[in-house]
Image (cartoon, rainbow, N blue to C red):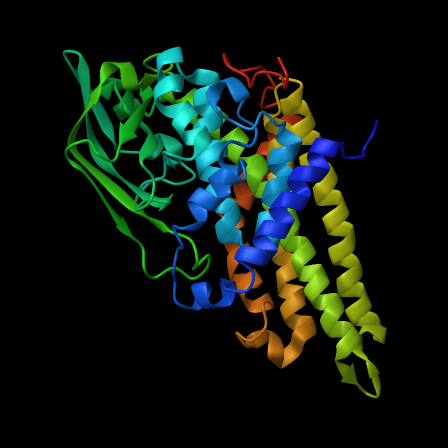
Length: 399
């Protein structure tokens, strides 16, 4: 196995790193303090090709592979989680799902402008009363002639007040809804401009304060029949497929956050003195930094494997879930230890590690809690969960 990055990988890694350091890092503390999402970042990210990084060139994207997507996510979250979240929902959850499940017409109408950044996409699965239990969602989609009428509310939606399009999951079979039979769910492309659509921002978040998170409501929203993604009744498969893509970006992003915690801790440990020596010379501080380093290296290898499988067009749910689970738990531990190494200063907003800690907590909850992922991995080992492929897989890179 060759773990060296090729020239394309090195280019996207350097591009994302330098842009985030130049454009966002000097301002991120203030953006976080004021709970401000800077919409001006989106066209800049589009100009760099980040919003279509691994979408094929024929659909307006940069045509890079899934390792490139992971590297971009790692570099963006090294500066702040809010940057990586943009790629998670726009590219991972939305665009890559349209790439595999969308019709040619849907790809031309939505995927191409999304890859170019003229449209921003998001994802609507979670609801006020349905998170880990996706079968508990209440959104309905009633077929009326040549359109579907959607009613419901989605909660904890990244880019809720920013996105132009939303990949929405809802029930098309009301009998199956009562039974919680997932074959009664379907997926739709919903435009913000559709009558009856409204959104709002959640203002009481604890972390990712420089990101936009909110909710949206659909009150008799009429969606054209051609906006049905896949076939009717395939919504649950499509939702899980989308999470396979999003979880790669979360795993890679958490790896970047881990590295940020390590680097901040090393700088502080080499500068701060206690008992006459730099605190980095104390054994228990060394132990925490060593744990960060081992977790960083392991997390990177795990998401690399997931991205490689995607490049090959192979089923990767098990591997991607493991990468997401391990990296997010490790990043939460690293952020907690980074605050501890900084002591009282870690409890101050003057240092970045408090922000890292607040941001890291979200990743062990969204896109599958750590508990859900732990159960999934046990089920794979015990034989209760199958690796049988879904109907659609990502096209192998370059094919």
